[in-house]
Structures are given as C-alpha cells and as structure tokens.
Length: 81
Image: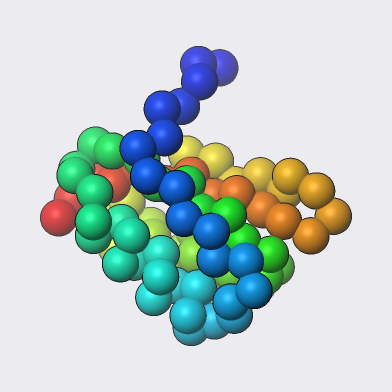
C-alpha cells in the first residue's frame, strides 16, 4: 500500500465526545478538498464515532489504526466542502 500523504495533523488526546468531533470537524474544514487529515486520539469511543461522522459528512476514511495500548490515528480525505 502506498504511503498516504498527510496534509494536516491534529492531536485531540485527552478530549472526549463531543469535543473530539468538534475539533476534527473544524480541522477538516480547514483543509482543501482532496487533502488528508490525520487525527491522533486516545478516546476509544471517538475511534468509532469520528469515522462514522466523517463518512456521514461525505468524507473518505482512509485508515483507522490502533497505534499502541491507548492511542489511535484516523486518516480522512476531504471529499467535499
């Protein structure tokens, strides 16, 4: 699999819903269509709810990865304004 170019990264560790989604939504609004956002988080529920919410808003989830015992990264491509 080719490496995914990350255009913007945010770290929302320590936040819980709904703040995790709010921060993620603001970050995706801040990039251009076709660019990718990587979200670093440590709230397990958000590792499921953020991808679903992003897809509901028309964006593409490229990857959800548990990177250690406590943290996940979610990679999202902005598909529309």
